Amino acid sequence: MCGIVGMVGADSGILRDTVQRLAGMEYRGYDSYGIAGLHGDESAISVHKNVGSVGRALRAGEFDSLPDTTLALAHTRWATHGGVTQANAHPHLDALGTVAVVHNGVIANHHEIRRQLEHEGVVFASDTDSEVAAHLIGRHIAAGATVLDALARTTRTLTGEYALGVIALSDPDAVYGTKRKSPLVAGHDGTRAALASDQMALTGLGQVVFLDDGDLVRLTPTSTEIYTLDADGQPVAARRPQVTLADQQTAEKGTFPHWMIKEIHDIPAAISTALHLPADQFDGIIPTGAARPAHLIGAGSAFYAAHIGQYLLAELAGISAIALPSDEASYLALLRPGDAVIAISQSGETFDTLEICRAALATGAVLTSVCNVPNSTQERMATHQLRQGSGPEICVLSTKSTISQVVLLARLALETGQHHGTLNSDQYQEHVDALTRLPEVIRGFLTDEADRIQEIAKQYSHVEDWFFIGRGHLFPAACESALKFKEVSYRHAEGMPAGLFKHGTISLIDEDFYTVALLPSAHAAEEQYTATLVAVSEIAARGGPVIGLGSQDADPDDIAAFSDYLALPYLDNIVTDLIIQLVAGQLLAYYCALHLGREIDQPRSLAKSVTVR
Ligand code: GLU
Image (cartoon, rainbow, N blue to C red):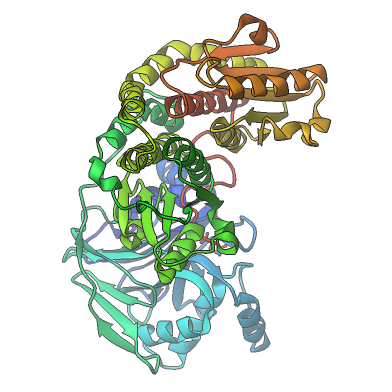
């Protein structure tokens, strides 16, 4: 993960500009931060770093007293190697202090390089994998290489994944970068130039270049020079298309206390946007008559969206699909040319998901991207794009973007089901009508039921252990709600299929282990409803308290089995009932975390865009 920003400019204010752009990328990691600076007429690179959040440090005025620079290189970290300490925060300097380096990714052969350098007398200042890059570059420069050559030679030594930003005393008018599998974008506007992990940090720089793997870039205020390595490993000038950045959407928290609750209130709009995507955009994603299963891939909440998609495709379109967590997909996805692969990622930069996208393309699969960030790596790779358009999501937990992904997958299932003739037009229309009414129903739910959910959350926030159970399409919904709950409340929560529960897991149940059961409509999904209630009574019989979510048409005798029951609005079975369940789960997680005083928008150890293996 980690966010990188490097800037160079003739005007004043470069240091502050760099930090401000970096603070906008805190979603990539927020355990520590640092900035290296150089004024063109100085002879030493200055470094300021600290543990904690760069955004908070900026608001507290921590950078106000730092002298301005013409060159700056900054980083916000999500530690992979080495603890969260000031010494391990980036940038890292080489032994002579002539080069500063920031890194996103994991250098796989860092032990080996470190051992060799230590053997040659280099003393390391940090425990990170990243510091080896600073020493390697510094040593090549000390031996007479240009910064560009030093960077090129260093990349020939490194294995693993990296985006590197580099500044050097020997070229005080330029920022350098290179990448392999981690994102890097560059641009200049004639007076200043910037290099960053994310296009959003390049706002105002007009046209930018998305670097390809193996590219090297030298940025000056008036130029973006791109190089690749020739067969002998020498840098040669290259050209890359320039992309005009769309106006960046900005987000305002308004009067909401947290981004999470604000973004939950954005859900109706996110659903409407997903519903407005033209129907023909779903054509060809799953070819008619395909004999092989589609593969749905995602990580974290996007995996649970994929898992929900698997049920939607089976139940609505009669299509076999396999949902896989991106990090496991390479072991299980036996892809062949023409197979449908649907990759789901809010950021479009999820490392594990991009790995399987690359493998899918190499096999000749038809790759579809479901993604919220336009122009992301995933989107640029894919054959088909389903753009979520949910707007920026600032809270590290996915709320509106997960719902929007589920809506797009529901539409894929509905459009494909109709096209393949597995849904008749009445069934299709019933689900489409329910989806159309959904934004309004969720608006009402947020207004009418928030207090009740807050009460439940408060009453049970002391509970340490939770199961979330469901059957059929409500099983992956239960898993997603459990994930949300644990991410933000730091309480142990696991999603389980209601039917599997009795095959072992039930041994954990006692009066301290609570369960949330997701119930479908008693009438529209009678078998699923009855079978879920059997699991509830088995848990209750062993003293386990159960909170019920769902079905307004539940029999009062059935509801009596629950310690608490929240009846949810109902529109249709399979599509909107599960989305309403997800929203209820998000609210439960939010209010529980609120009551426990957790860091809601930036929970410990998380990052929004997971760009490392
Ligand atoms: N591996 C580097 C570190 O631990 C960078 C981590 C990252 O990109 O998240 O400092």
